[in-house]
Image 1 (cartoon, helix red, strand yellow):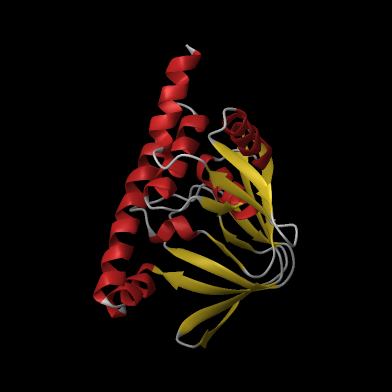
Image 2: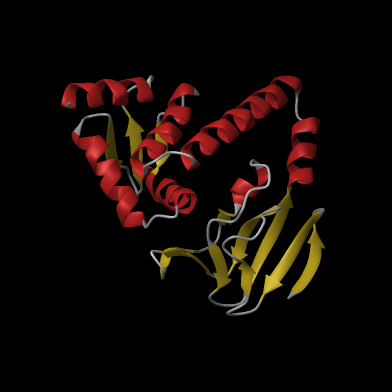
Length: 210
């Protein structure tokens, strides 16, 4: 592994088949992939499951910037020679500190809410409810439109589930008209939330289904 500095950030080079981080290890950095391909995988029911294969420009391991003592929920391995930009909590804190007061306040609020929502999601007895909590966080902050592929990838990482499982849960929510999956110009798919009070709508729907 080689490392250099670029614009004040640490840039690392991982050779093919090198492990960038392992499932269960403590996460202290996020990574921006600028060159090469990275496999994100984890152990599910005792077997290795590949959650995603990342290409530039992609960010991974980002939950380490937001959650205290967060353990990695997946393993990242270079499928070919890769270059990544390393981002740590200090970089994030410096960015927030140097931002205009209103932006810094907004960032701090969003980070706090993300911590709370993700911690609750990880404690959820089932994945579908955890997904609903994450979507509710976005809706509460006025974010009603999510790019499909990154959203699927991040939720599969958080819940250590396969992308197919996450897609099945989202399809159930779409069938209940709580969200829709739309294809935009250029072939990009988006998840569009239909209710501003998303979690409230989910609970109401659950009561009606009983």
